[in-house]
Length: 73
Image (cartoon, rainbow, N blue to C red; front, top):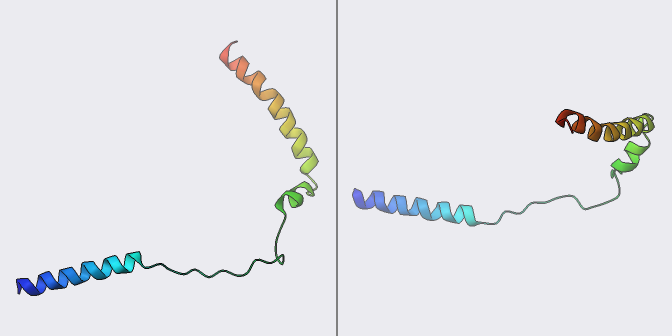
């Protein structure tokens, strides 16, 4: 009985190693321009982009000033 368990365990380990090391093939669709989105252009064309840029520029200018003020420099 012990010999049977040893053979069974050995076979299980062998098949596990074989299963783990087998390469798997992944298939994907061919690259094509259909359905491709230029996100940078899409964002730049948004109606609120100009206002968002101005808000960002103000925040970038104010941030170092706030950092200096909170440090007490």
